[in-house]
Length: 129
Image (tube, rainbow, N blue to C red; front, top):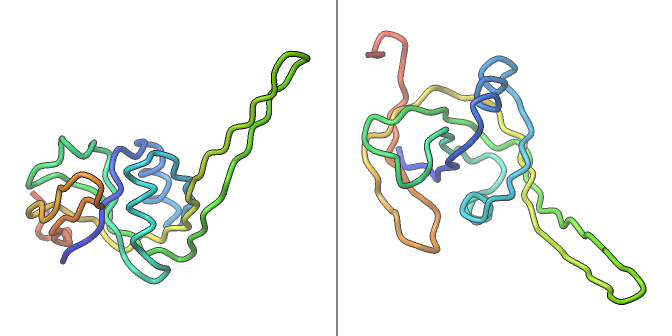
């Protein structure tokens, strides 16, 4: 099945999702943020610890369903007598529910400026190698 991928996730996040089955993550990296803009609650995505350029057929990860999704804006203000600086950064917050373990079959889209699309097989315990 074809999934949008979130890449470069921390090992502890993947482990917590595996153990607890539900986990809320806040995504700030631009490539993963834009990937989440292309999905809706109820859809499934593929999560992996590997960075996007390192994904090859056989890369493992998790298939998760999106329960809730929201975009948020962080605003930071710094000022003194001489200057005033205001910065904004957007992030996406997604509540994920573990569906299955997956393994990449092939990369279907790796175009700049678009979400990474992967053809992923669900790995059953009897299929594990």
